[in-house]
Image (cartoon, rainbow, N blue to C red; front, side, top):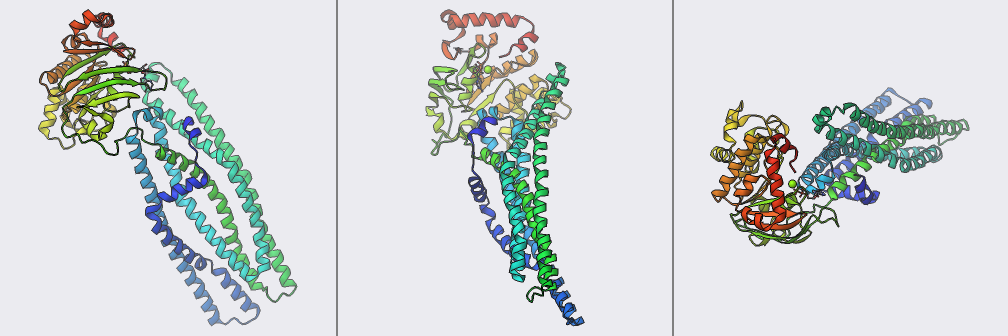
Amino acid sequence: MAQQDTTYQLSSSQLWTRIWTRLQPCRGKLILSTALLVLAVPFVNFHPLVWGFVADHLVEQTLTPRLLGMWLTIMLVTYLIGLALGAFQSYILEKAGQAFVRDIRIELFSKFQHQTLAYHHDHSSGELVTRMTSDVDAMEQSVLQGVTTLFEEVVTFIVVAAMVLWLSPVVGAASILPLAFAFIFIQKYNRKVKSVYEGVRKRLGNIGSFLQDRLAGIQVTQSFAREEAEKEKFEEKAEGFYESSVTASRLRNTYFPVVSTFGFLNNLVMLGVGAWLILKGSEWFTLGALIAYRGFWWRLQSPIRTIAQTSDILQRARAAASRIMELLDEPVRIESPEKPTELPVVNGAVDFDRVTFSYIPGKTILSDVTFSVAAGEFVAVAGGSGSGKSTLLNLIPRFYDAVDGRILIDGNHVKALELSSLRNSIGYVGQENYLFSGTVDQNLRYGKPEASEEEIFEAASAANAHEFIESLPQGYQTEVGQNGVKLSGGQRQRLSLARAFLTQPQILLLDEPTASVEPESESLIHEAILKRTREGEGTTILVTHRVDLLQQAPRILFLEDGELVGDGNHAALTLACPEYNEAYHRWEVEESDTPAQRVGEAG
Ligand SMILES: Nc1ncnc2c1ncn2[C@@H]1O[C@H](COP(=O)(O)OP(=O)(O)O)[C@@H](O)[C@H]1O
Ligand SMILES: [Mg+2]
């Protein structure tokens, strides 16, 4: 988060231009609403003039009941017209504003969906949730309340100022003058408060991410009895938020009284200059005009106050909008090429051609890896923890892009393929696989919503999951809870395997699928995988260090520190690859230990 903020900066004008561009679809509504507003304001603000006219008639003793009736009617009617126009105007504007934030929310969600894994590793889900909720809320507030009110008040101010000047240029100008000072003061304050609000929101975001993270890890916290320590950490963050909010509040509260005082000065000037003119027997400034001024006073005063408060909202909104734009502007680093190669039928051949990869520049994780996997082949990938096995698998569906070299599917460079068709032809099952809240059935059909019941049963059976699913309280309709908390690790894995099987991927990537499951599930999963490979249902690349699988695999790729040092079956590697031999004996010893220990060492 902090990293991003230093590299991403939009000036105010850039930001508002950006927002204005996004308002494109509702510009018609905005223009209509502006027109209605300009129309409504004179009607709503007509009544002080009536007071003035009536007062002058009274002074001149020319007021008849008929005349009074007429003025009162005009007063009521103009007010009602103004009110109706205003209500219609604000409805239209609010509708436009709501549509604006709805579109932003949808766009943000879609952006998050497409962003690379690398991006999601850099941004905690808590941070993204905060941005999607409170930042969008703040922006909503600014568009709906901030801009609407600001706009309304500016128009009111202009109209009323015109009336006041028309009544008397001298008194008008004298009473508007103090407001100019108030306005200058507001400008100054704005500049000051900007960074303070950025700080407030950033700290709120920190609280959000921290909360999300610690709730997700609640079991770890409790098992280490770290509740109090976590509370202290949270206190620190809450304190930071408190401090910056108090700073903002102090600024606000020293500033509003000053603005009010300046604003109130025009009351003084109006009464003083006005009464003095009347005392002097001025012909062109009457008691009626003074009374009208009294009515207009608040109408001049309130825009200045509102503009002051709105600028406060606008500052917050600006900070929020800037962060939202940052998210929207962040390019998706892995996308389909502009003119993707058609890939009608995938056979499932995978080639690595001198592939080099690093997550962080300068720290090579895979170097110069070259191998070919034929369509339908079953290959195991083995190697010590951290040797780059998972990374190697992740490059095939383009979760990450190779830094150098080429990865080919049926002879096509993966970067040249349509991303969704590439990924649709690949099934991926890792060590831990997320299950969405919902039923077993909904989770299984995630990759193929239109699958028939038979297909579901078939996939579940192939993954050795059918039996346990049937034994659940509601069978396939059982709710699994968020991330499948109501299932055992092995059951979750078998569901994930079935979920992958259902889409009948030509290439199945398995990353230590039994690393964290109980032994009974482990043998069921191994059985399911071997069955698929025997029946030739596609290419299978399996990362594992389970000795029984290594012995049965027709071919093993052995990685050490990101280099491919062995390629052959178990017997061949035992003879030719000392690194493999050594690792194999280590795994053999580990496996003869208790299963519990093995689970702990899964890498
Ligand atoms: N997202 C990441 N960012 C930076 N480094 C990573 C990331 N994922 C893995 N690594 C590093 O890459 C190396 C290989 O990781 P990995 O492919 O997961 O190994 P394996 O699966 O063989 O245990 C490790 O040193 C690991 O620390
Ligand atoms: Mg791994």
